[in-house]
Amino acid sequence: MSEAPSARIEEARQRVAKRLRDLRLDARLTGQDIVERTGWQKSKASRLQNGVTPPSADDIRTWCKVCGADDEVIDIIEAARSADSMYSDWRRENRRGLKPMQVARAGVHRSTAQMRVYSSTLFPGLLQTRAYAVALLADIARAKGIPDDSAAAADARVERASIIREGGRTFAFVVEEAALRRHVGDADVMAAQLLHLLDAARYPAVSLGVIPAGAPARWPLDAHREMTRSAVFGPEAYRIIAGAIPGLS
Image 1 (cartoon, rainbow, N blue to C red):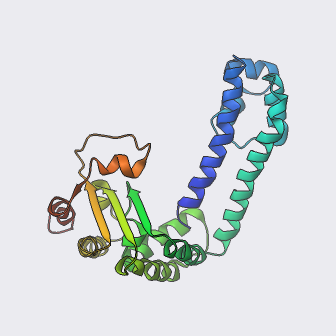
Image 2 (cartoon, rainbow, N blue to C red):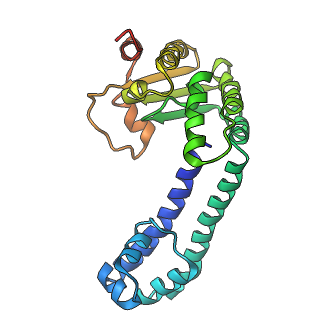
Image 3 (spheres, rainbow, N blue to C red):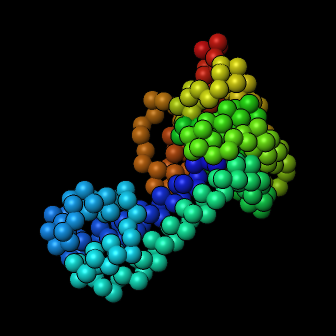
């Protein structure tokens, strides 16, 4: 599976943690106050309010009680259960391998007329070659301990990516130079991937910007809009891409 589902789960869990943290702050309590009033270890209180450990229903009830916010219990428990449900669904999908998610996303992409993508460390999926996708997905399968159907998943990803050559849609990609230089697979895989990127950048429906390594840092509150301001396009972007091709730089 790609990183995206786990990112959504993490966001949901962080929202729960933030609500707990906000309750503590609203009650003008410190982390030490929580520890003393609950009898918990300091590490547990820290993990809960920082989203490291998902809270149980009893944890939430206790936290709300010491913060004088019993009226918040039901809403926060429901939010925590929703995050847990997302995680359970994601794990079930993982056990099926990588291909089902690639196939599922095809429908979403085909129903989208305008797509904006910012990527800091990897080539966007719609711009990946099959060899690059196989190497990346195989690494993901190994890291997550799930069935490795990376070859079939890569086939599905490349088939999905064919939409960038079709009419009726526009695609605005912004990638960091670091993504061009982070090796996935061997040098031949990277060279082919970078050459493919140069080709894809010239498709009528595609806008491709590259943020040079030396560009000022920007906080991606609205990632695509903010990062586009630091990106270069056209010949300047092509020079950076060509400079990252193994053996040519």
